[in-house]
Length: 168
Image (cartoon, rainbow, N blue to C red; front, side):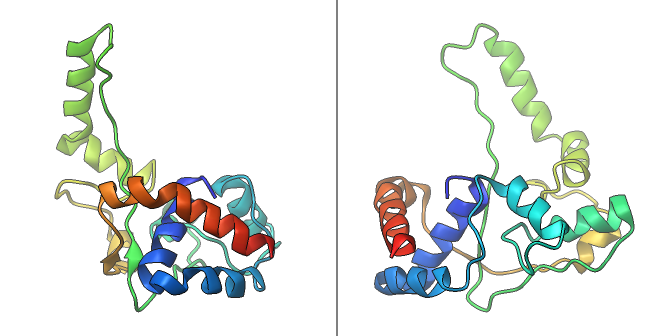
């Protein structure tokens, strides 16, 4: 529940179901095989045949197509849209090498780095760069969710509601 995909699911559930989210969690719990400690444990279980579906990323199929030349994995597209996951990097105020940290942050948003990240971290770039053709075949969902401020304000309550609904 605290992995970034798990938190994305939590945001999505609250965006889609609003004040009916607790009931939606209870209904989903009846169809859930297991909740793992993190994304990798769940994804490994899925790849080993331990589950028919797994909560993952819309870019996961690109990994299999590029690295394994397999195209049997597909991402579901939800008509309501998907919660976007944005990876972040930051420089600490107490950094001992602030200039070096700033250079690294600038590199991360450079075209050079943004061409590497989609095929190593399997995420979409934040700047417009040419991607391998496989990315053209991926689901391109509408985004749903909340502002970072709304999530920060409501996150603890949402987690509490999720745990409570899943326990019943």
